[in-house]
Amino acid sequence: MDTQVLTETATALVADDKGLLAMDESNPTCNQRFAKLGIPQTEEARRSYRELIVTTPNLSKSISGAILYDETIRQRTTDRTPFVEVLVTAGIIPGIKVDAGAKSLAGHPGERITEGLDGLRARLAEYSQMGARFAKWRAVISLGDGLPSQGCIEANAHALARYAALCQESGLVPIVEPEVLMDGPHTIARCGEVTEEVLHAVFHQLYVQRVVLEGMLLKPNMVLPGLACPEQETVEEAADATVNCLLRSVPAAVAGIAFLSGGQSSELASARLNAMNVRFQTRLPWPLAFSFARAIQQPALEIWSGQEANVKAAQQALAHRAHCNRAARCGDYSATMESTAGEQ
Ligand code: 13P
Image (cartoon, rainbow, N blue to C red; front, side, top):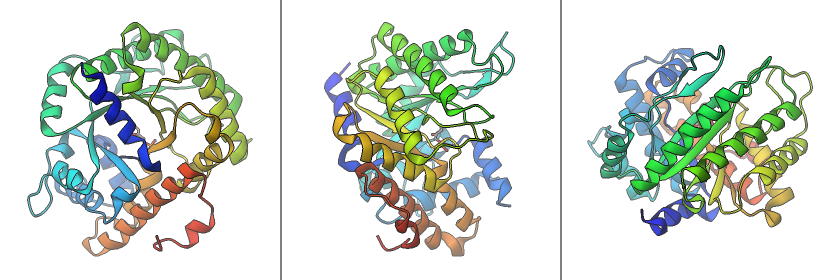
């Protein structure tokens, strides 16, 4: 294992106040999002949409790396240039989602385990050969009556650590993503309690599996009230709850933290990341960055709606969200940026 290469890649992914663009929706998830907007759910529509993303002018001003999906990493632009080549030429590091999705966990109704370890070593070798330099694996933890169970937390933490060790063996930086879901009426305190417990379990397993913390990134949820919780805390309260939870559970050696957006609105995701950096940046051991899918893509996807004529406007919206999130990394984001869209 080349620890230096891993550390350099991990550091590059969170350098210069940039962040990651997750564009690794599986085909079923991408199709679901297309269906809501009346976009055809075909391979060609998915390819066109991903071409729109990777060819967005100036994307690399705010985006350090892009996470692709198995179908996408094999696709090309209309002029036959592989997407990976387009990204590398723009100065964006290509990455790849390698988990095989979250499936029902036997004996644990309402809970899921992420699959994909079988054959992973060979798949990582192939992706690495195709140009990927980092990978992602997402575990999901649901909150509810009696949930999550110890069995679910431990099984997912173990799988994340096995995946991370295999990635590092192949020279790929693992993004370790344990997502505590926002669905439900739980309070912010409950989300914080569970997130802390999950992160402790994950870092214990990463230690047991000998994962080099300097050569990985953590992709956690923010600590937030459930979407159906009547009490919704302020941006500052959410920032404090999130950073305090991370300070208690994430070792200082980790190269960086890049949040998922998890179903927050684009503006709230930027505002919360901004508040964390305003309030804590000078006293944190790791950079706080972003690795959003919906919070960067959603406005662009809605503008595009499958229409060639809308590509340019959609690309502007995508670049704008990326720009807002880069500003949030420096604590420079403000709501006024939303009314000056397109001026960056
Ligand atoms: P969201 O930002 O839409 O939560 O997606 C992040 C991601 O990559 C999920 O695995």
